[in-house]
Image 1 (cartoon, rainbow, N blue to C red):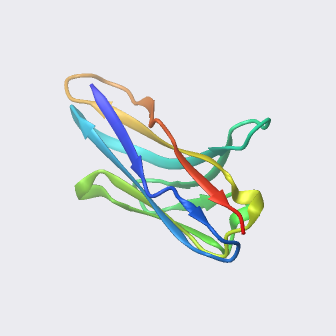
Image 2 (image 1 turned 45 degrees about the vertical axis):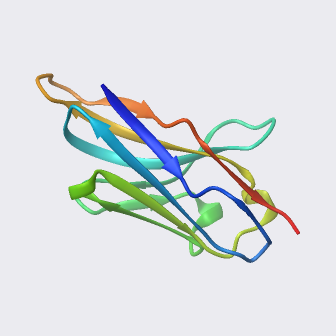
Image 3 (image 1 turned 30 degrees about the horizontal axis):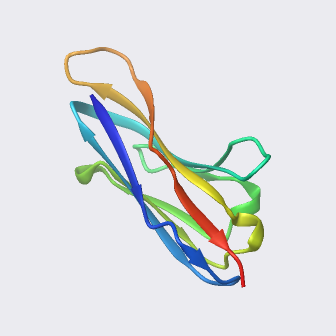
Length: 121
């Protein structure tokens, strides 16, 4: 019913930048929070940044000042601008959205398939 498709992952050198995109499609009535999570090999998935529909955002301490999350509500799309990338940012990045489907009450969580970000020289 709802699909999230991420793009923008790549191999980049330390200090470089990338911009991730995630577009939600399907029977969407509204979206509350859209967020980016990441999972590095051997580690648990962690929240990177979240953008709430009312404009509020929050970030993991490890990315504050380097990453910026934004969203286009008209396009049901969320972005993650990543600057000053470090090797420890290497991970699979997953998009997540809390979606209310047309004809149903309540919000349900959906996940994208992930996009690989590798920071290495």
